[in-house]
Image 1 (cartoon, one colour):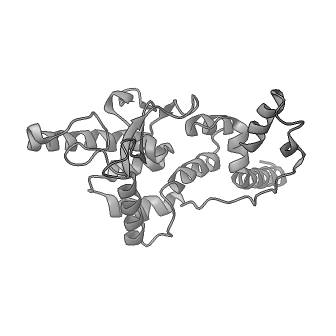
Image 2 (cartoon, one colour):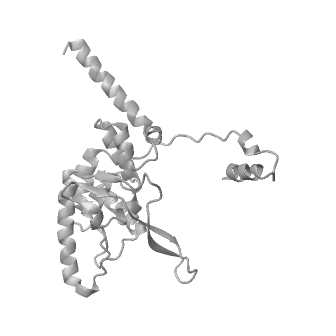
Image 3 (cartoon, helix red, strand yellow):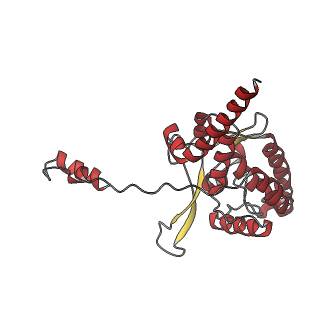
Length: 247
């Protein structure tokens, strides 16, 4: 940000040169994201959530790699269960209250932040089944509340139709992990878990990058370089076994 400001100042003659360009920024240590394995989610977390009204919410989170705001902003008009895809066209975020009175922050629906974030995501069959069941359950909630249901067309909402607070999602996720006895991870790490699963099962990096809504395949490769190294080692071991046995 400072470099951009000084670059503009240099253009208009306010400074002689942009000295920030002369500085070499420190390299941050690469972080390996915490993830869960498929067996951990399938046999540990899913049984804990089975039957819960947010079951489809968390299953969709793990099977699509959506960001939290993308998940909570999803509308039924953006989901096509027949073709098995969803479209990211809206996000839900908590922002400072523009009115400056009452609550410090408010929930608002916004457009996705980048063109890459505005994307189409494929839905696995298990996710489609869960979403159909979730839609039927939601229809019962609407019928029960009648005029008291504030319908905003959201796929994942509170029982009265209001948006789910992102902070509530965080707390619920933490509690579910604790009940399942699984390692504590952040809600956002479900997205990293999804990407790791995809790469480990041989899905091309470009496809994973598109599904995640990354700005480039380079970004995906950089974030998940540790996974691609593991996959490469597994591939080398498979090739070695085939070569030495002649099969």
